[in-house]
Structure formats: C-alpha cells, structure tokens
Length: 163
Image (cartoon, rainbow, N blue to C red):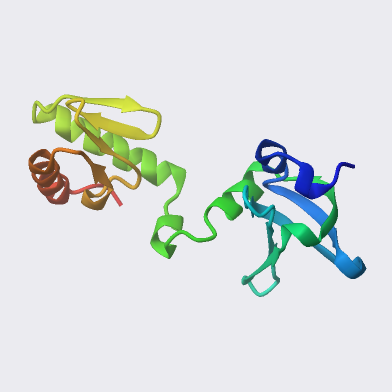
C-alpha cells in the first residue's frame, strides 16, 4: 500500500463511507467509518456509532498514518447516517414519503396559483429564479433576488402542507 500522505485527495475520497482500520505511529490502531479526509493535512476523521445511540468522533493526524485497511463498504443506510451526523435534529425526522407529499402538495398549490414551477430531482424551481429544497419550508427557499425570495417565502409560509 502506498504511503497515506503520498495519496491524492481523490484517492483519499475513495475511503469515505467505508469502515477502516487505521494503523498510526507507535502501532496505535483505530477502527471506524471514514466521515471525511482533509485534502491539505491528510487527516482522517472516523465515526463510530455507539450502542447508546451516541457517536464517537476521532481525528487521526495524516502524518501519523502508516496504513489504512478497508474493512467494509458502506451501504445506503450507513451513508445516510454519516451524512446526517451534523445536521440539525429536525432535518433528520422526515421520511422520504413525507417529503414527497410535501413537495407534491407545494408544487400543486403553486401551479394552481399560476406560479411556474418545475422539479429538478428533489428541488422545486420557481420561475427559474428561486429554488425550494426539502423539507420545502420558507427557510428552504433560495434566490439571489431578495424581493422574489421574500415574497415566495411568505407564500410558502402561508401554504399548509400535509403532515
């Protein structure tokens, strides 16, 4: 295996969302899911999900890494857990079914009110100048035009979505 610090950031990225065993200086070994790697310092951030529902985060300095062995590939569920680790609690509580209903309801309501709206994946695009991301609330609206942003946020706020 090539020396860790000699790898490129793209090579380090291949380790993200995988369970690994890291051997560092003085034969210290660490095991966990790779949350991220730092492209400048080669540091590795590992996450371990504990039985009590908590998460242990450990950073290993890149210069100390001697070897990294992939133990297991992450499945979709594991990737979701890692992606959502540092998101606000309320953003984790929505099911895909709920989000789909909210998106469809808001899109239908906008169309009924003659506001042009299209879908791009999970994002709604309003009149080509504003986007609304999940979970489709006023705080999820984005636009460089502050007048349009403010007006659409007011409309979205007034729209009652299914629970």
